[in-house]
Image (cartoon, rainbow, N blue to C red; front, side, top):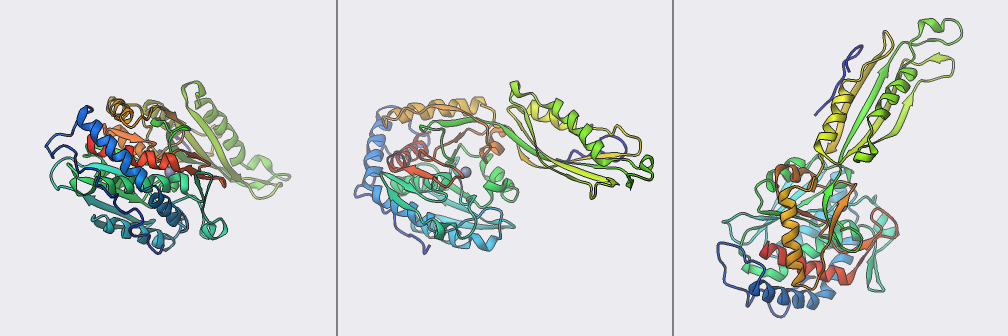
Length: 420
Ligand SMILES: [Zn+2]
């Protein structure tokens, strides 16, 4: 969407096989396939027990795959070629799982779609992003390592740990999936998902459930609400003049911008969760010139679609206060709020019941940052986000994940795929 106010007026060498199948296929004694998913009960308890043991048995393979992924750079928003190696790693893993892999080329790198299991039925979608915030060269400068029960390294927490848990889950379930399982690996989440948004919506809107393997809240709780996010460019224009000789001929775009930003500040409502950050400001050229242009970039966060729309409308209606000046507001990018819809609440309740079968106490809570789950929640899709392993240091140099949690999440994701 674009809110434009018119001028003068309105406003690895692929680690194939690293996560080899456990000695005992986890679904060996699971209930026979049926058209409806199993429910939390004796059958789910049996399956949970097997998945837990199966995940523990492949602990070393999970760690090896995570280290292998983290040895390869996957910079978001860069040249698509910069993601080729990371993409090849995933393709090798997926083919080794027996998945049918489709490559969707985008300007930001390839979106990988992979399907497993039966063709009929509502699929479960596992949504992962394989880009990281780290630029090329990071993996060589800070190679990943295992230490003290944790894997440290670039992208381990956001979200390679989640990718490894999801792939490990598919491997545990093996060929006996009772419903279609689809993976989507996107290349540009960290820079807003402009290139992959359409595919995310296409494959997510008809899913029985969407599992998003972003890092959880500290301690492992699910993220069942996320703020929305929108960025805007606010530009003002005036007329240049000599600041000493004939300032009266000038129209200051910077003064116009200052007034506009005072109005923008009044739109924030922190108590309601609506914040506006003026992150960048620019304009003018020299002290003795009345400036004819100025601009600011805004980052707007809101908990609800209603709040996001209120701010959007108000920005679109911004008008200049000086005769001859103009104010233009352009919506650049964003994601809608992920409100805790009834579908999300029900899925979280179900996930919590299933997690108990793994002796996991699964909490939930809201978070300020966005993910690709934000695109699907408003469509009424049951989205479970924050399914990646516990750790710390997202987008930070001390990034790391707990190996115990990696194993636990592998079993949990497998159980959710089978029983949600
Ligand atoms: Zn992430």
